[in-house]
Structure formats: C-alpha cells, structure tokens
Image (cartoon, rainbow over all chains, first blue to last red; front, side, top):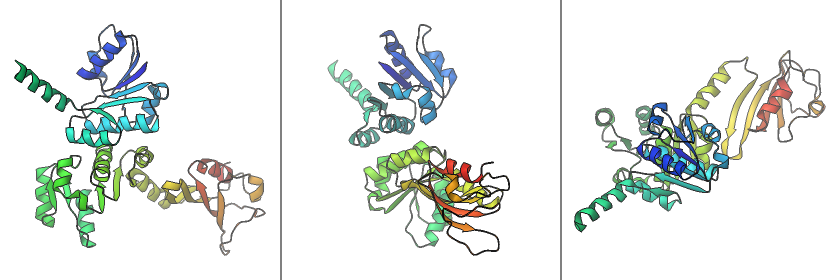
Length: 133
Length: 210
C-alpha cells in the first residue's frame, strides 16, 4: 500500500518504520526536519518537510495516489483538519487520525472520521493492568 | 481581533459571549466590557456546553490558527447545532477548504485586505467588486490599458470565456452603457463584468493583455 503519515514523532516514526519493514511504500511529512532523526537508518521511504494541512504539500507527498493517510501530529486540530482534507477533498480510501481529547474524538467519529483517542485507549489499558494483576 | 469584534457586536445590541484560553485576556475582557467572557478552549465540547453554545445563533472563530477555527466551528455546528458558523481564515488557500468542510462563512483576512488594496491602487487592471463564494461567481471591474490588445476591437472579436458577461461599460464623459457584441473598446474604458473564479484569469488576459 502507498501510505502517507503526517507527523514524525515517536508514534509516527515507529509506525513508518513498521510499515516500511512490511514492504509498504511510506511517505512521512513533518514541519520539522529534525523529527526525521527518529526514523531508523534502514527506513526506505520518503521523508518530506512541510505542513500536512497544506493541499500543495499533500499533492507533493502523492496524496492523489495514496491508499491510506494517517495523521499523528501533536495537535488534535491539525490532525482533524488534515484527515478531513485527505478524506473529503482527495478521497483517500482509508484515513485514520489521532485525537487525544475523547469528546472531540466522539464528535468526529459521529461525522464519519476514523479516529483513535490514545487517552481512552491508554486509560483502559492501565485499568485492565491494575485490576488483572 | 476578538476584543474589537466583541465590542462592536455588543454596541450593535447583540448578546455576545467570548471564549478564550488565556486567563489574563479574560480578565481584561471582564474589566472593559462586563461579564462577557468564559475561560476555556473553544474547541472543547465541555467549554462550548458551559458557554451554552446550543442556544447560539452564530458562532465566530477568530483565532490566528486555521485548524483551531475549523474545529471550533465544526463542533459548534455539528455537536451543538449552531445554525451559522463564521471562521477567520489566515491562509487564503483554506477559504475553499473550509467551505467544503461545512463552514458556513469562511472569511479570509488576507483576501479582504487585498481587495481593499486593489480598490485603492487605480493602476491595478482588475478589481474584485464582489465575490459570491458558493456559486464561484464574481463581479469584477476591468480597466482597459493603452497597451491592451483589445483596444480597437469589438467585443465579439475578443472571444471571451462563455461564462463571462460584460455588464457595463464606463467611458470618460459618456453615460454608462451596456456593451453589445459590436461595442469597440478604447483605452481607459472601465468594464464591469460578471465572471467565474475559473475564468477570471482568461477574461483579464483577453481584455487587458498586451
């Protein structure tokens, strides 16, 4: 699959490296070139410096041919905006974004955006860990 | 921007509530304008609920962050059913994107200033008089220059874009008239035309291009 990942933080870089190792064609976008230090030396994909909420930048990243788009920057709103551009303007078949705020995540899920809230997931995971041991 | 907007809207007799994350700004608001401020993030459902967003007739997001304005308006509209959302757009490219993503009225500050500058600089050959965003139509004023190839030609010879209509011709010393296919253009003619965003560039080229 051709996959674009917006945000090269710990999660973005890790995801990029996993998918790259699985043989997918990966493009990572981040506004700060320094973030790309997190990509492993073996990373065979493309790293682009730019704003993933900018249409021109997304075109440069090949969004018109992308099979999937993942938004995992630190900003909920940036992720939401980029994901909606990918989904509603470029019609990318699979779009997933991270939204830390659980209530905001619910609103956008109701609007048809596929979103994950690490806050909810991690809290549940901690609870299960505490109660099962 | 929020402060001046709030002040002006209050003066017009509207009921206004301001949301701001910054405690100091909120205090300033209260000191100057009375209890009009709720401290909180306008993108958060809880803040909007506290502010009574479901009773609002209009929601305006006027921060300097486009993504924040988009999300705040979308939550106001889709979660709280606010009938009219207005967003300040900082990057002009986002005006169209905001519209596609459901914002009722995206306002590009840059474009607004640009339109005013165009009006003030008479040498500019094409001035936007009115933009009708949803229909992608606009009314423009075009000034024919000495160097324009269209000088001495009739309207029908110019093969203008089909979706553009020349509505009015203003010529020095004459009454404004409606140009016909046989009207011959002269330098310094001013033409008011109806066109589309897509054809604007072609229209400009045909009328003023040298």
